[in-house]
Image 1 (cartoon, one colour):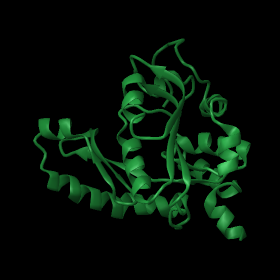
Image 2 (cartoon, rainbow, N blue to C red; image 1 turned 90 degrees about the vertical axis):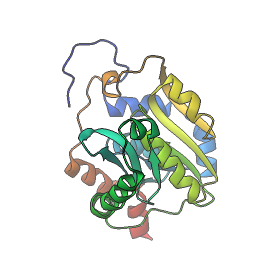
Image 3 (cartoon, rainbow, N blue to C red; image 1 turned 30 degrees about the vertical axis):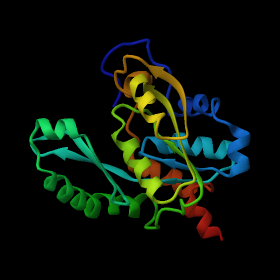
Image 4 (spheres, rainbow, N blue to C red; image 1 turned 180 degrees about the vertical axis):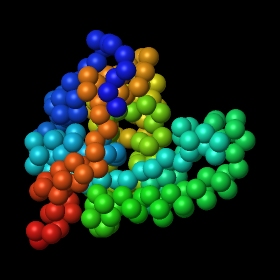
Length: 232
């Protein structure tokens, strides 16, 4: 969605600009030497991840994570579930809304079977997530607000046996940076915000990418892992 308010506080023109600025703070030589695998964590992160992967001649894939919403509020995310069925809960909200954890697990299964499987078929052409074990992973998103999806992704790749896990985001809340920095090996960021508003706020242009456009980008990108498998 475009911004509905005027502001000169944006740091990025668009996702491509964010990718170039994030690329500038990444350790190029180390990433090439160790053949890091890049993982996009959202539809909006695909363009950023693709830009970086092509610049460094590295492979990338998608790690699909979906929100679990409060039963009486479809705008309130209370947990996240990944394609590997890892779950991360926002316990403070769950407790305050007095939500039974059974609801979380039932919704996680339903969302996995209905939404996540569909996204795997659409965006990864039905192929499984590429091998994570013993690899250096860089998780990439367009911003980091609550940290729920990032934590869910970290939990997923940890349990898949990743050797090292780093996070790359153009913008992140300062307190979230401090907490995530205790979990991952390294965080690469362009801007840390003491008073974080929303990810959208820091982009001049922040439209939700259309599904067809994302699929076309993935189909044509030789660095996207499913395409490398087809060429083998």
